[in-house]
Image (cartoon, rainbow over the protein chains, first blue to last red):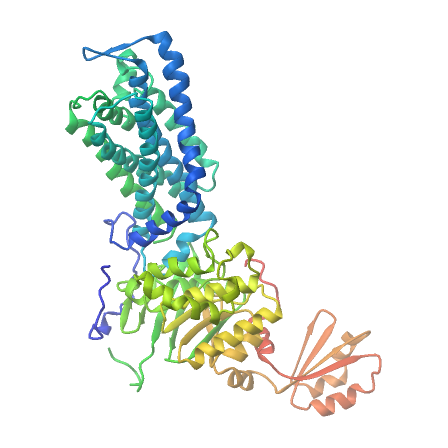
Length: 284
Length: 314
């Protein structure tokens, strides 16, 4: 913990009557004090982990079975960069990114909003020596962890169904944590702006749903008209899929720096904006 | 720092010329006060007087537009976290974790202070005992009564063994039994040498617990002092309340000369007087009226200073 234990020799004469309002856009002040807040969420989740796990993996598995086996039979194998792959492998590698996106978004919207606004958990924490910046950091990492947990469970099922057994899946795992971090940071921007749960419907229908269809999950982006593709290429989900899909096919992705850079840029900018808007919300 | 009067024991906490505006509305206006070690300072005032905003500024949660706060030799907002490490807080609305039982609430809260699990777990039995919640250790807040929840909030505020407690309306909404138990606990804390800043709406609470009072209205300090001194300073020693059929008629009768001040609220006439026995004798001529003779109290003071009208904006 980084709290300085100040000695009593501090100059008491620094008391000024000057305004002390700081810009909400000041640099983040992140410390290890985020950890007990993360631990708090972990403790709640441990009580509900099994039912929540079922909810988290049931939907992606339905997509996989219905589209992978159902549509896959109609579509037949795809040719990606000269490799022939079954449709279910193509879909699995994309839908796992979508699962990371959805899990992180749900947690950083509905659950974080409950803690921030409904239960006033954040207010309670801020009466202890934990700053708002560390609370937002904890929520961001927590939502990313939830995404990682969901993704791990789905990967387990995919391995069991023998959809992929590429050893490079071990590399896909931390990449998917990064995808969780990107989407939880983005969701926290909207959490900071929300007046109620209804607000999140806009984020899901106007952003996440189109993202799902334009992210290269269900069909290759090459199928899209050029101007739509130009937009899709800059969506975080498309960049996540571009990194994760080759790993499922036991290959290394191309343009790692570009795709990783896009995800990182979304994450850093979103986190900063989320922090500034949350500080505004709390008058800090 | 140039102190006007060098004092032997420096205040534990001091706020100087605090000002806070929200839009064009000045919520706290040039407010200064200090809390001495071992003291219970009460802050009373009508709804919207600026009590909660003052508490939030004391915690560094709301930045003042002017003025400064220092506590425990540290400076707000620069040392906000180091100050909060030594303070315990009970807010108006409970912020207990609904998913955790009483023990877990204390454990998780102690972690926010950087305390080790072992260290917190050692303290939990005594904290639950203090809050009379030992038998509810495994119960969640949803299963507790209002008074139990408030006591759990108090126990939570004590997890870090703070020197100073900030209590924002800790007994609002509690039944008399629960309030009395809360008062008893707070008195025990004062006996242990803790200092308390308490905001309240209940004048009997303020009179019972606080060694000194601050009366706020419209963000300004309008009176400060020991409860008994304030009453003696601002009020006549006795109050005779007159009610019943025709009570309002006595307001303008010659009886008025026996009172220093007469107020009417609803159907009751309040005579503030230092000639109570003469007044009561004279009132015996009106057998249809009922009277209540009592010493002037803080509530009278409060109503005199802040008026009887309801604050619609609160």
